[in-house]
Image 1 (cartoon, rainbow, N blue to C red):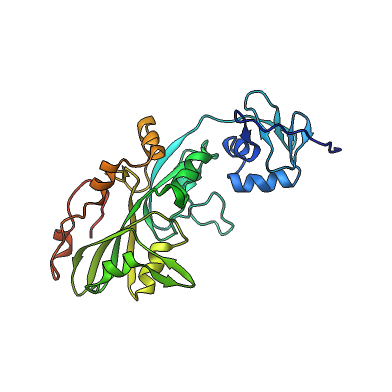
Image 2 (image 1 turned 90 degrees about the horizontal axis):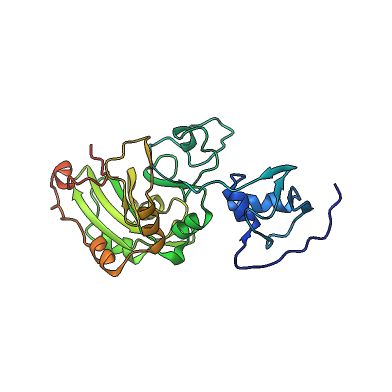
Length: 284
């Protein structure tokens, strides 16, 4: 089909074409950009290759490879990811993916950030690109908490070194906050809080400090806690929860969320040292 010059109107009431494609379940927003550049998308019968193009949902006719598209209702899901699952929708090696844990009709959902294959805990999935951007971009400062089980006894200055930052493969990695839950000669339990989402950041921080991670679990994103959501299970987020995540923490919430948990003395029993509160903390 012959391509024609497209006239693109930039209007604040419109949405970017790649966002429209993502919300229609075509692919993630970044992957949708490639689809546009390949010339597979038409708007009102005109092939569009411009990444800055915008459309008006419900007014403009958008098609992919000749098939009409329309946006879907926005959906927000909290999942307790088990170990051994990948945060992807396709895997050539046939490994287990988080999409396998969701209803088959939810093929348009994509993970908000990632947890590596051996990590577990809270992760969101959505078809809302703005929601995903707000939770993953460092400029919004959405805090994520992790409970980390380590082999051996951590040094006394562990938390100071984590919050000061460490270097790993040319990158500076830093925790916003860190607490030691318990320490024995065989094991230690540490909690860290981050606002960035660099690749395998938590594991790399402890690797830089010479510590072996035995277990890594994300227990909170912003104000939303893992709670008693069981491994492999999901629930939808309420409208109130979505608004709270998009609004960001109030000063009162920041202070409440930053209060460190009770510290356990060195040599204390690990299972007894971890507070038994419903935040999804798993102990062995």
